[in-house]
Length: 184
Image (cartoon, rainbow, N blue to C red; front, side):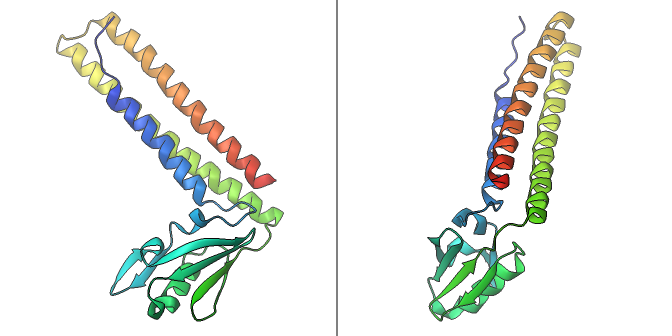
């Protein structure tokens, strides 16, 4: 059997899975979760910064989060950042913190979230395909320069495809779990 190190490829597959999991944590289901606000950027002190750098996010109840600013002078900026993020939530400020209220998910919104989840799945699959193409090109190059035989090349291609299939299966399972979560 040929000597080919799949570490780089395996790392890219793991990175795709990790990226998809992070994206799915940010997709809203029926419950309020602080991770949903991870992508929110706030204009503070002359630059755009992540919300978690300027405030603390806590869960108040199943449909409400509370954002407490580290500096009360940027409370309006935090509220504006959450509104601009367009994640379908209501905000209200009480002078010391911002309450973020999540409406009940309608069936239409659930469908939109499932479509968004499918889009994220496809992005992750694309990253896997790109990683596969890079690994395959490297295998072909090594065969051309004589470090691999043609038989080695094709056995490595089979192994590569098995790894791609396994990675795509895991991505698909992550989507199915999230879809079930969004539907309940």
